[in-house]
Length: 235
Length: 182
Image 1 (spheres, rainbow over the protein chains, first blue to last red):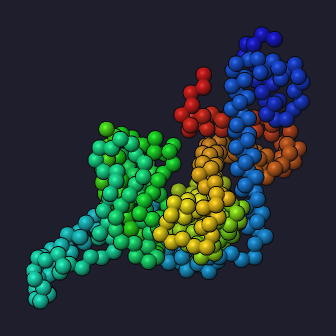
Image 2: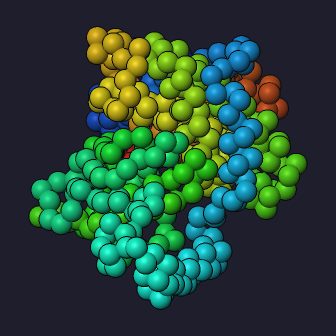
């Protein structure tokens, strides 16, 4: 027993992993080798994880196959057909449809603002002109990022204010401040019914020192109907 | 996926059929967790899961079956809903006392789900041959004899591919966890 890692140890590791018989002397030799010992610990951890995930997946699939009906069965068809009216966008593709939509959206906003400036005051002669009370807020218009905003000690909970109409939800996306709007976000929440979202500690700690995050309000079909953005950075 | 994105009607119908598993995944996993969510909550989780599936569909690369990919999304959405409920979300219903009584360790389940997600990501990075054998061994619970028969390989070849796959998987997991074992 030399304690030195060599090809023989690799063979023993393979034997251990594939369930081949490993006698006590060989096992003891593996455990006396620091490289093998660390390797064994890692491999055991990976095997445990594989078994755990495998068992869970198998039992859920078995239960799923044996289940004649489940809550929400009737929602599948209408939801997907509704969503299919707007095809899902391709991430990391050419980006052309996304950019075209973005340019189109910006032009539409510019036209709407121009129209409001020109026609708005005339269209409502009874209003007191310029009073915020004269503007009717649409869904998502009152969204406001609460935190993290500006310099912070650490990233933990993302919070925001704004009305949540029935059947709508929020989605939070976190990007680098210099990322393009079509780049995949570093973090993306599922559809949320709350005004806060806490990613896991591991994901939070992987964020860069400076971030740009956006919360958007999504309607029943998943379309974005309003959003708010904020930048934050670690002190 | 390509056909759905290009709005082929038959593909959308086929997708609806395939996604019939979503409510059952959600209900089955909820039951596994001790039924923390009531039927009305489950319907919301189904809806959220469908929206996420649709949004992320272009990112599905077919390295596993569509159902396995959808299952992962359902697990995440369900746990997220349970966690929101546990944090005192806006709507609290009948089953909330199960969370309050500590019958379900939501944080532990969340961490477990995270570890599973890292594992699935690592599995995605293996070669098709490696992934297939590792999945057959641990997810389908097959022996090397059964795997070698199924794939028409010698048992030694199956074992070698499995060993290589698990070693690489371990490396990906280590890197994902920021490990630096020397």
